[in-house]
Image 1 (cartoon, rainbow, N blue to C red):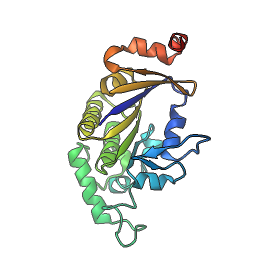
Image 2 (tube, rainbow, N blue to C red):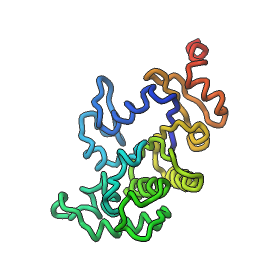
Image 3 (cartoon, one colour):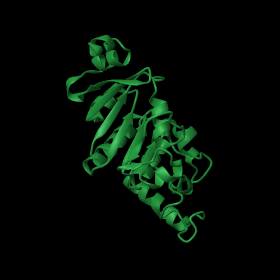
Amino acid sequence: GEILGIAGVEGNGQHELVAAILGTQKTNAGRIYLMGNDITSTSVRSRRESGLGYIPQDRQEEGLLLTAPLWENAALGHQTEKPFSGGWNQWFIDREGSRAQTERIRTEFDVRTPNVEVSAHALSGGNQQKLIVGREMVSEPSVLVASHPTRGIDVGAQASVWGQIRQARSQGLATLLISADLDELIGLSDVIVVMFRGRIVAQLDPSEITPRSLGAYMTGTTIEEIAE
């Protein structure tokens, strides 16, 4: 039920943090726990099946197969789970189940497309993003890692994504929000932590800061004051 915002100038460790949590990059030290379970040494697939949701920072490079139909894209990251899995053999996709789930995403998340057979490439950037957000939300994750969830989309799609994240929070979802949009961080987060040169250097209350003061923390302007 909390959104934890991660602020920082890009290149200060946010990407590595996400990769470590997701399992695409090994950690040199420390432990990672998901709902009380140690997942430090588990695979990406295991983490996903354990309830880790993920909205990638680049929807076209990491989030979608652009030439594949929407119902195949809706299964990405969840292909071993129902309703996408064939049941008795998780390596076979249940096409009807996938299409039905994609129709649900299309309706609930206002993905504007004539049908679920069109390729992801045919969608606007905003609708591609809503498909990805919907794909993660309907899987009912325990924790959602949202990396730049509204980057490069129009105001209408942005408002839709923000609304979905807020609604999920009200229903108990824990979200780790990484964003370069300071208004987004301040507007959505319950708590903000600042990363600078790979370390967390501040914990802030969004109700008490402005984009200008947050920007100062991100560039290291106030680091010496924090240390004192």
